[in-house]
Amino acid sequence: MASQIGHFINGKNVPGGSGRFGDVFNPATGEKTARVALASAAEVDAAVQVAKNAQLAWGAMPPLRRARVMFKVKDLIEKRLDDIARLLTLEHGKTFDDAKGEVGRGLEVVEFACGIAHHMRGDYTEQIATDMDAWSMRQPLGVVAGITPFNFPIMIPCWMGAMAVACGNAFILKPSEKDPSAPMLLTELFAEAGVPAGIFQAINGDKEAVDALLTHPDVPAISFVGSTAIGRYVYHTGTQHDKRVQALCGAKNHMVVMPDADLDQTTDALIGAGYGAAGERCMAISVAVAVGDVGDKLIEKLVPRVQALKVGPGLDPQSEMGPLVTRQHLDKVKGYVDLGVKEGAKLVVDGRELKLQGYENGNFMGGCLFDNVTPDMTIYKDEIFGPVLSIVRAKGFDDAIKLVNDHAYGNGTAIFTRDGDSARAFANNVKIGMVGVNVPIPVPVAYHSFGGWKASVFGDHGIYGMEGVRFYTKLKTVSARWPTGIRSGAEFHFKARH
Ligand code: NAD
Image (cartoon, rainbow, N blue to C red; front, side, top):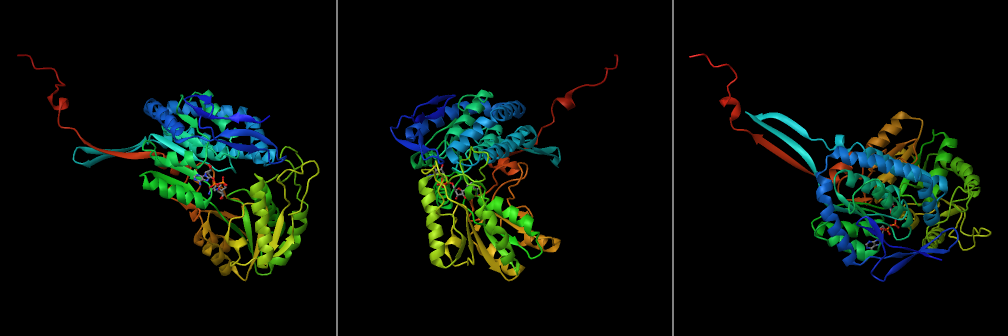
């Protein structure tokens, strides 16, 4: 029987009160596993009021004490890693090992947040004028909210929540309604670790809950990760309501393969980065730009590997690629493959008809590989977000980098080469936020920061690392002069005897 998922408000799980629900499915079987409550604006407001009250004491607490709580959060996530990963696989579909990897990448940001006392320390300048000093400090914003996508239901709430809470804010998470169970467990773990009631809450919902957050006068900052269409809306609506908004959005990541690249290494990298998590990663490689004569050799190596991908349920240890998140998304991805054929691209591996015995209702498809894709095609312009890799041919390095720079999206990119000069020129001149040199998915570590360029982002500040600290705090600078006081009036010597 389908379970009910409500909200986590004021330190406890509460049922939804709006009467509206969404369905949650196991993408491997197609079975409906839960009903998730979709919050009303009034429920969002109730959570904001709780958060506002709770934040005063939490924000005033020494950062070192907040850091100690973060160490406990880290410990609990590590202890429950398998449970979290299992929930991820059951609702998102990704393989169990990949799910554990996701938890690991989220944990790295929690680890960074454990150092918050150091990260929030201020600047001090002695003697800015005669007998005057100045110092700057970072203070929390208050109540902040995070709206997250379906594809990293734990990692992205950790990127936002751990940083926001460690900085002294109260955080309200609005997880994706497609896979809410893992983020609900994360919320419980924050509470178990000692984060006070109201400091890390979760509100499930759809547009109504998002709009309530975007327009709420007591929520000064919004973090969003999701598609470009919704991110643009979130950014414009939030900023129109005077909020600080960071919106990290869609992508079309290119890997440039130079003629001197190690082709076995490149093929391994393309298989992992193109088809891992069924291509449902914002840093997935969806375009390989074959430079010079490398295209035919690359196709020759890729075709048998794509055909041999082991597609199956994520909990089966043999599976390399799981199902897509929903039936609707599967249909959309297959629709793009149909369109690519119509547009004249050459479909060299066709995974559309894949059927798995015993999993006939699952959202499975095999890997697809297109050759001769050109920049005017919709399958090149749009983010497909599925296991579909396109090969584009480029005459030389300059054509390749132009392709990457002319694309509307600017999240991630990579170059595979043995030539340091090409790699350096690429890294320095490419108009993309995150660049890999012989690294296919260059997601920065937690103490750098994550963020794309162009249509892959709206607003300022990367989402973790020191950029995250800046986003979740406001700067205050004090200039101080003390009039002569007790020091000059004090007597430091014995009085002479009279
Ligand atoms: P989505 O935009 O459909 O949903 C993201 C969030 O917005 C969800 O919480 C959802 O409930 C909410 N939402 C959906 N429709 C809304 C509406 N009309 N009004 C207000 N809120 C709404 O994205 P998704 O399908 O869950 O996630 C996949 C997308 O996220 C891809 O485009 C992917 O590239 C992107 N993504 C980007 C990054 C990044 O860091 N750049 C990381 C992960 C995913």
